[in-house]
Image (cartoon, rainbow, N blue to C red; front, top):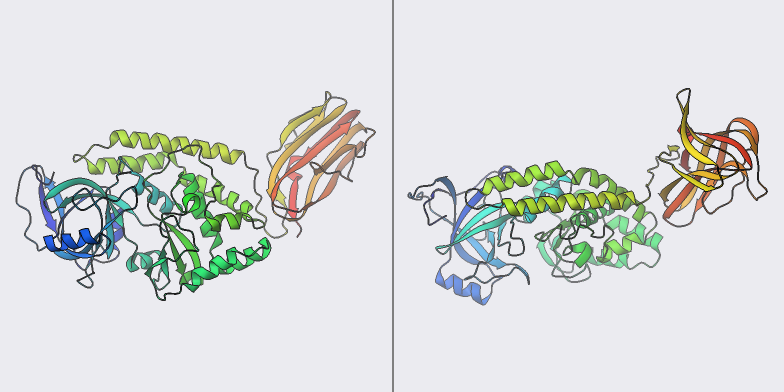
Length: 514
């Protein structure tokens, strides 16, 4: 502890190169922070907790377990105010969360390359791990996010213990993330959607025309026109990935599910398009069954109504699931954070609980994704091979089975009279598609019905193609017209009084014609 037998070395950080931020924030361990505020400044802070006051700040480093003198470097003068929302705000004499502005009063002064950073009291996360791990996963997914590690705070002589030290949203962070920092950057506000007036964190102007244009485009009644308008103003793929991450982590208090804890950036490197940035992630993975299609945030809901967007989102879910839900990597990172705070505090129990929750959520997400039809990703008008058909015996003794003949994979139906098929459900957006398969028959006697023999079709629709008798390999073609986004079942079937049909498994394709 600061007061009970540990020796610290004072490290006053000024003019640190910006590239030092990553090394500092990504390293497990504790940054020991000592802050002192005069009585006059404290009185001002108590009168207006969100307004900056002057404070003296120094970082210290643990170098042993015996009492010893602290280094002699002069503490830095910084700006400080209290932070936190309804659940986490605490006053100065309690255990407050703090925002520290390094160059508020001394220009070009920084802390490990950061102009602004925070000490979160983690009152809603007793394990002190959620912020670090959630932000780590956002970055692992290739999305912009600030990072978090552990800090230890001594405030006006009071040893307040472990905190979460969070990288601030400032111009250096924007520069590191996007290569430039001249776009408008907004605080989303407390439980407020994009239509409310926002606090401008970085940038210029007061009327916020960029946000107003996005909100107006969201109000377009025609979903096709709405998507076209939003595509000019919003990085839709980034927003969908952001939504997937919040839903994966059961982030009930983020933009997607509670229009809270988010930032907005209009990125010049994306032609000024808007993206979303996460914030306030201290209550994650609470419900393993959390909905992966959460969309209370109006931007997400209005996008989901547009043609093809839910299909794009489902594809995003699958791709990010493979990257994010790496349980061994997650556990390794958690263990490193836990080791980094010892011997000051033991978080092993909380860490094991978090690892269990993450593994349970990863498994449930896998189950939920398995229930969603595959979303084919077409490249122009190139045929896409369809795999993974399941067996369906619908009537009579006919049976469908996987076979092989001379290294040729076959989907075979035989065994007598009746109806049997192979089926595959895919999610398709509106358009015209061509479904094809090479088929052969032996001694097939058809049935007295609208369509008979061996053939291919879309479930719920009739077909014109039909093979009866004994016919060698023949290319069957069926055209699908999809009116609205959703699941479509592809069918390879035999309807007969007797006989046998084979479908060449390598030849079954789907092409988007237009």
